[in-house]
Image (cartoon, rainbow, N blue to C red; front, top):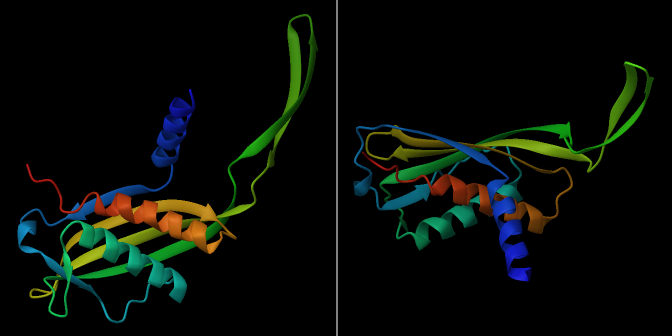
Length: 173
């Protein structure tokens, strides 16, 4: 029973989170791209610590898949984010009602719980270094707590970037 519960919770956690949309140049042969590097002057709109987290996680995930970071890469990686704050969508509902005969009246409302969240759109571009053309782009939408700890931010970016890189290289038909 314990294993079943752990499995169900894992599926729920992995199914939640970021949604990823991908676009790419379908005339590109992605098999030729084996080396990468990051643009030297990335202006992501995030703080320096988040930039370092994203670079470290992307490095790790790409190297696990056989890509090599190089000073003369086949493609450059650029990323940037846009963020806005909103209240958590989690609420506790309270309702009052009454009725008699064939008539019923009710009033209800929701009390937000969980504090504010940061809605983040992370865009990752892969640019061919010889032609200076965008060859692949992923856009991930996700959210994390406004006052997330460094460990929770790291976990958030691992999940988001894993989902992004799962779609690279694109499957050709």
